[in-house]
Image 1 (tube, rainbow, N blue to C red):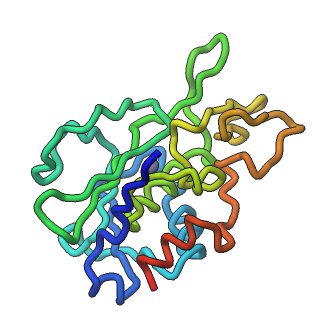
Image 2 (cartoon, rainbow, N blue to C red):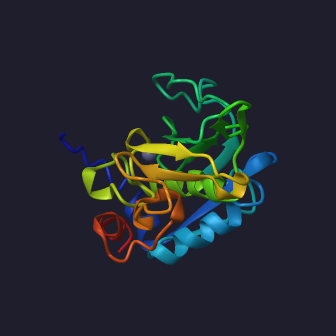
Amino acid sequence: MQETHGDGYWSAGIRRAGKLQYFAIGHLGPFHSVLTAAIHWFNAQSRLNFVPARSESAAHVLIEIGDPMVSFEGYPEPPDPLPAIQTRGLTLPSAKRQDKVKIFLPANPCMSVRKIGARPTGGKVKKYIITHELFHAAGLDEHSDASLKDAFCDGEDLYDQAGDKNAEEDSVWLKGTSGGSDGNPRNQISGLFPLNGNATAQRLNAIWP
Ligand SMILES: [Zn+2]
């Protein structure tokens, strides 16, 4: 697969400052309780720091529960709908401004569970959902094979596993690996293991020196 490295979306001035201000539009519903933890994890992985913005207009990164079918600042092509119950989000750059992106989060992320169909997922998976989108907000565009074992892994390469006991045991795993107790925990993408200078970290460092 050919990689199109659209990395480095942000202007040189913003990248030099090493900060992106974020702002949650409205209440983030099921994500409200995990946003700070996701930001904290991300900030520890790179020289970029996400910091709270005082206002929506000052923010570089807007975060909202919602459906991107509702056009974001003239985004040229309406993206696919974001199903309310899925465990993936979406990040889009503004088509009008070079200094804004928006993270869309699903309204009610769920795990499918035998017999009962679906139920809301727990904090670990929700934190992973936000974290993945923070990579995009940081300027990482395309997923690559190099990110297969970290939180920037392409959602197509993952599967969800509902916890036996409760939603807090829900997890997201690399396809082709076992999510059972004998599985390699490194393959649990929702485990949010440190990047430790891996290829994804190097891409971040190239943007945020
Ligand atoms: Zn992605």
